[in-house]
Length: 453
Image (cartoon, rainbow, N blue to C red; front, top):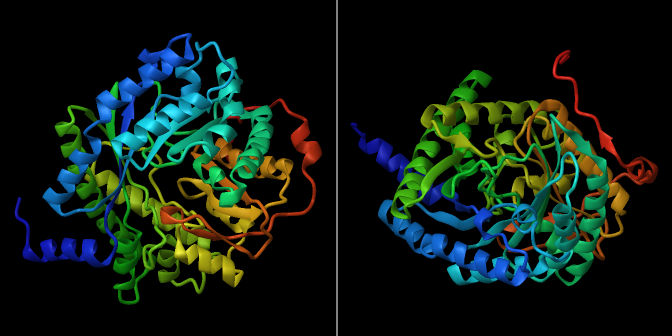
């Protein structure tokens, strides 16, 4: 294959000036063989299993970084949902499992470990219930463990009992980590239609249909797309879409090359490449900046949803041409705290919680890394979750909620989480009560699959 010198210089410029990187290399590990009635034996099995698979994950990934000169920002692990793996344990407290996951993650040197998870869209087993009850303590007593709960699917509907529980769980997680602005909630995601091969935290887990050990890769690239769109001279929307497709193609090729080499060296299977554009707090590495480059004065104003739809679709089309192993979430993330453009838009008053909800109808994730006042009630949090789950259920797509009722904060305050989690302006919520709605419980039935007007 002939490579022109201009293409080499273009890639160097992407890495050095436009924040091009591999966001994460995530090793998925099955824990289904670790089950044991004694929680101590189970924890020992989990520790040994993860260590045997991922002991050289960080070292190998760093070797690939040096070989290709491409930064890999995060090295992570996802495991079988603990609610499934630990179901046979004769205990109702799974927080010791979270501590085991945290300990092995610290020893291996990965950034996060995901899979303290449950799938309860249609109902809960005692293992699911134990796990959800253990989440606040688990997140407060660990640094690297991430949790997720899938409460809805298009085929099952929305488990409103679980939605109500998750509102209370978020409040408890915030209170137990109140001295750190409720950071426990930044490691907890509530899903509809959760993908089982997602390499991004906090929602990563190793699904039951996955192989024993697999490498999934998530690419980044908002800075590169932003620079490419801004370089166009008075483009039409067709020109913008074509530009984004070509850029996504190049980003995807790079990610697949890195992922396959890591998998080969670790004797693991290569899984998927997640095409999501994931912003960082760095200036210029912003999804909001791309939308504003298309002609919007400020992200969140009228036209934002249409611009995001164009971006999301073009990224998927370009990436799909470059790889036959596309999976995960794939699209554009719109986390508020991790995107300088989103933060500025909230501070200007152009971006509200309601507009973010509308934007999630056309992007890959959902309401992500949003801080709300500390006195927000559990019922209001559950109602926000229910709204987002309904969007995912009806539109046959993944949606999620990662929301932080930061203790002691009010509308307009800034909450600092640090690192990639960034900082978030506290956004207002509606003051009208949803208590009676959430208290009804039961399940919202799955939607009809025809008559889709």
